[in-house]
Length: 211
Image 1 (cartoon, helix red, strand yellow):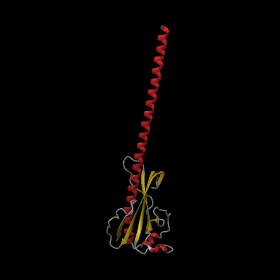
Image 2 (cartoon, helix red, strand yellow):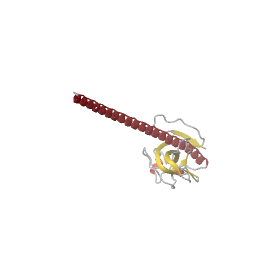
Image 3 (cartoon, one colour):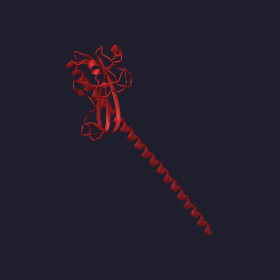
Image 4 (cartoon, helix red, strand yellow):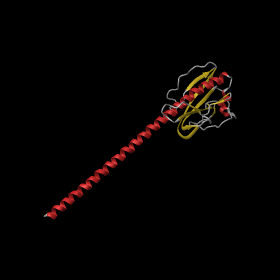
């Protein structure tokens, strides 16, 4: 009789131990799942923040480029002169058309311009400006290409890097890139023109600028 009670007690303790181990295993799996999804959410939020910052850097570059092209027009620099600049490195761009050449306006190249970092962040935003002739210009058939319609495409490449060196150049790791392009008609009297709605969701619009 006594032996039977001892065996039942052992079985009860053994069953309780198994249940406890199962509970610990379930809680561990739940905890790992929560930690994983929390980390994934943080990464997603971080990627969204970087993408937005790169977009704003590229947008800031476009506004700077508009002013630079207005200045070039005031200095009597032609669109052909701008798209024929041979210095720097050309860049292949999405959407077809010719390669972009660095925007160079009478001694100034708009290459890797650093922007002020947002408070509490260590990432650094930069933009680089390029220009190319619009694909509709018949002057593209010439060698080298020339401008015949006073229309130029301004391209802004916004990038986020992990650091900046003493010379103001990006260092470390490239975190995000955003490319925006707009078409500008260079005229004598500058004025704004409405965007081409729904024409290019990737960021191309049309405006006018001039002296």
